[in-house]
Amino acid sequence: MCGIVGAIAGRNVLPILMDGLQRLEYRGYDSAGVAIRDAAGELLRFRALGKVSVLKELVDRSDIAGDLGIAHTRWATHGAPSERNAHPHMSGVRVAVVHNGIIENHRELRDRLLALGYTFTSETDTEVIAHLLAHKLEGGRDLYAAVVEAAAELDGAYALAAASPEDPDRIVVTREGSPLVIGLGEGENFIASDVAALLPVTRRFIFLEEGDVAEVRRDGVTVCDGDGIEVVREIKTSELSSASIDKGLYAHYMLKEIYEQPAVIAETLEGRIHKGRLLEASFGHETTALLDKARHIQIVACGTSYHAGMVARYWMEEFGIPCSVEVASEYRYRKVVVPEGSLLITISQSGETADTLAALRGSRANGYIGSLTVCNVPESSLVRESDVCFMTRAGTEIGVASTKAFTTQLVALRLLAIALARRKELSTAQEEAMVNELHALPRQIEVVLQLADAIKTMAEGFVDKHNALFLGRGAFYPVALEGALKLKEISYIHAEAYPAGELKHGPLALVDESMPVVCALPDDPLLEKVLSNLQEVRARGGELFLFSDHKVNVGLDHYQNLTLSDIYPGTAPIVYSIPLQLLAYHVAVLKGTDVDQPRNLAKSVTVE
Ligand code: G6P
Image 1 (spheres, rainbow, N blue to C red):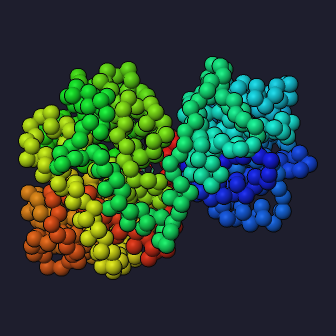
Image 2 (image 1 turned 60 degrees about the horizontal axis):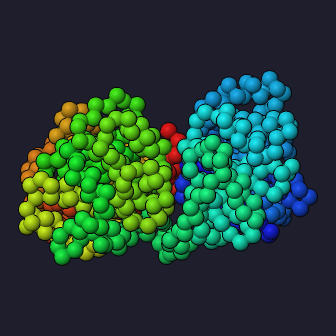
Image 3 (image 1 turned 180 degrees about the horizontal axis):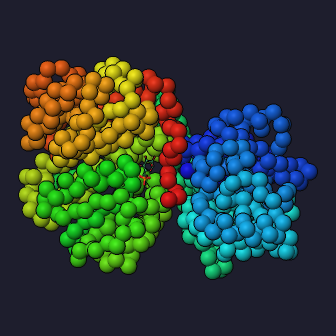
C-alpha cells in the first residue's frame, strides 16, 4: 500500500527521501512522487509512473536540493495508476500533501471545493485534502490549524503529511486508521509510514496513535491527541537494522526469506520451550490467564495469515478445543454470535491490515474474554490494541508473497495449541513429543531446502501453463490453499486449491493434459483417500507434481515426485509448505515476473 516519507533538516533531504521511498518499495506501489522546498522557498514537485528508479532519474536530472520535503509511493485506490494521480497532491503552490488511506466522503468534499472555485487535476480522493488545506490557509489558519480542521471534516482512514512554503519550518502530520511514525534525529526529524524507510537516519521512533496530530520541526516534535491536548508519546528504539533488510547475495528477497526459515523458526521457539516442555512463563501472566479462561477460539486474519489460522484449527480441535476461523473482511461485517468463553485470536504479519484491525476493534462489544494477536511487528497497531500478543520473530519480511512470516505464525500457533491442549487432555509424554517435533523443524527444513534444484526442474513444467490445481485433505487443504496463493501471486498463473474430496464436485471438469495438479502427500491417515483422488486426476490426463513422504507408495502411472524423509505428522504442514514456496518462486523466476513486488499487490493492506 501507499508509503509516506518526509524530512525536515539543516541539510539537503532529497537523498533521504529517495532512499526512504526505495525502502518502502516492498509495500507495493505503482507510482511515486516527491515535493521539496528549494532554496528559494518554493515547493517543487516531481512525480512518475512506475518504479522509484524512474522518479529518481527525473529528480537526479533536475539538480535540485531542499531542506524540507515529503514523498510518497502510491498504490492506486481512487483513479488509475498515472503520473497525475501520483502524490504529492498540491493546491496551486500553496500546500502539498501525501496520504495513505481512503477518504470516504471525498465526493461531497470535492463538490464543495469545486463550488469554491478549486480546480481538480486528478481522480484521487487525496486531492480534496490539498484543496481543503489551501482553503483553510486562505482563511488565515496556519498549517497546523488547517490540518486539525481539515482532519475533522474527513471520513475514512488516513495517515497524511502536509507541507507549505508559507509555513517553512514544519511538516504537519496526522493519522486515523493508517500507521505513521516520526523518526527523531539531531537537529532534524523525519516521518514515515513504517520504520523501514528511516533506518539509515535514525533508530528512535514515536508511533503516533489514532487521532494524533503532530508538528515536526527541525528542533523537535510536538504531538497532540485527538482532543487537541499536548501529549508525550513514548520514544522507542527500533531493533531493526538497515542491514537486516538487505537482500544480501540472494537474487530476490523472497528467496532470502525462504532460506531464513530455519533460523527464524529457531528464534520464534527461543525461550518458549525448556527441557522438552513448554515454558508458559515466557508467554506472560496475562496471556496464560486468558488461556485458562478460553473455552472457544475465534481466529480472524487475511491472506496467508488466514491460511495459518486454518491449519491451527485442525491442531486445536484435535485436542478438543473448539475453534472457528474466518477472513477478517467477512467477519467484520457479519452479525457474530460469540460462544461464552471465546478468545479472539488475530494473526497478522504486519499488524496493520485494515480488515483484521477493524475486526479486532469491532469485537470489543461482542463479549470476548479478550484478544490475542499473533504478530510479527512489535510496534504495530494490532499489538498495541490487543490485550496480549504472541510475537513471531521472523524479522522484516520484504517479499510481498509471505513465506517466513507464515511458517513462524504456524510455529507460534502450534505453541499456543500445546498450551491450550495442556488445559485439556495432553499428557506429559504427548507434550514432550510435540515440543520435540518443533525442535526438529530447523534441521528438517534445512534438508528440504536442498531440494531447490530439483524443484527448479519441476517448475519448468508450469511455465507454459495457464492454470494449476492444488489438492489437499485435512490440515493439508490450507497448505494447498497457501501453495496456490503463492503461485498465483508471483507467477500470475491462475491457481486454485480444493479439498481433494471436492474434486468430483466441480474441478475435475477442468482436468486434462494441460492442467498441472500439485499435491503434498505426507504419510498420514488420509493418504489412501488422497491417492484415489489423484488416480481420478490421472485418469483424465492431469499432470501430477507431488511432494511425498519417502515411505509413501504413490503407485500411479505417471507423475513427478520429490520425497521428504522423517517428517512428523504434527509439524508436517509447516515442512511441506517449503517446497510449495520454492515451486512458486522458481516458476515466477522462469516466467520473468517481478517476484518481490508482484503487480497490483501490496505487502501491507492498510485500506479495505
Ligand atoms: C497482503 C500480503 C499477504 C498477507 C496479507 C495479510 O495480502 O500480500 O502476504 O498475507 O496481506 O497481511 P498481514 O500483514 O495481516 O499478515
